[in-house]
Length: 354
Ligand code: ADP
Ligand code: DP6
Ligand code: CO
Image (cartoon, rainbow, N blue to C red; front, side, top):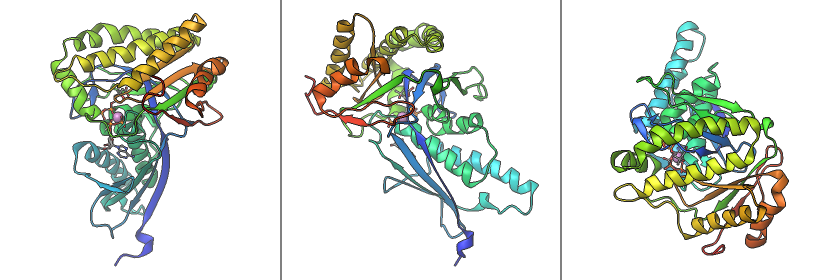
């Protein structure tokens, strides 16, 4: 039996991020390298987060991962890549200093909880792998920068590389085969645009039928629209979106966000067999935002959907009454996310917006 002193442990949390220019498509499935750059907002102060504890001990039989109380397979290449890279960084420390405990040789036990729906298009893989990587890095006391951790988290799930940073975050696709230039970076901190809000409308907490990984590979293989999105549409939008964020130009931010969500879902529909992430309630939310914007005479709200039916609506705090107020009136209790107050998830029943 091992002694209790053999047990080492670290806990952390990571937030979700919701892309306004979507990552969809891999040019390398082994390294998780994207076909296009993407840009997201990290919902740091929202209630949507992953809490992960990483432990290691000689008394554990093998590496393990418990997610929301159920045992997960850790044999997959993505989780293995994260474990391998983090262990290599720890080994380097142990080789330099003989006094350091040999943590890299011990089996890892990861226990993780998402406090929001998993695999439902609310970026659980992003918060999940960001938390997994940071928890192990803390356990190993690695002096790694967010950029280095982000490079590792990317190999767990692409979108996770953006959750290691706060605020407005871009993931540069890069061109190198080994992915050394495929990195996330902060476009602007949350404090640059503190009045930005996000409303999360939970249409369904059910696990999606087609995972993001499977869906994007099918799109790359079969969609005729997709090459145009990658080559012409996204590169221009990335530049315009960065400018809109720097200038705090909400109307342009909203226009690009909605167009990009629609372009991504159009590519899903253009996939063979077609992938339907949106449902009737999602479409009702789109109509609701269109209605709010029409009434205001300008874009004051922007919807976006990841790979699932759940809606995220971005708006500026100055329009809280017109945007969140509208949803509140229709749906009951709705709260927004912001950089200071925290946030909440509004559940939407089938047809409530219909
Ligand atoms: P989502 O839209 O929620 O990101 P994905 O299809 O991209 O859905 O990924 C869902 C998968 O991500 C889950 O089935 C699980 O394998 C992994 N995942 C989710 N949360 C965690 C977590 N906290 N720790 C480790 N892996 C996670
Ligand atoms: C629609 O990062 O979940 O949310 O790299 O295969 O794990 P894997 O995919 P994932 O894909 C996210 C797709 C998206 C858009 C985005 O977050 O940019
Ligand atoms: Co995901």
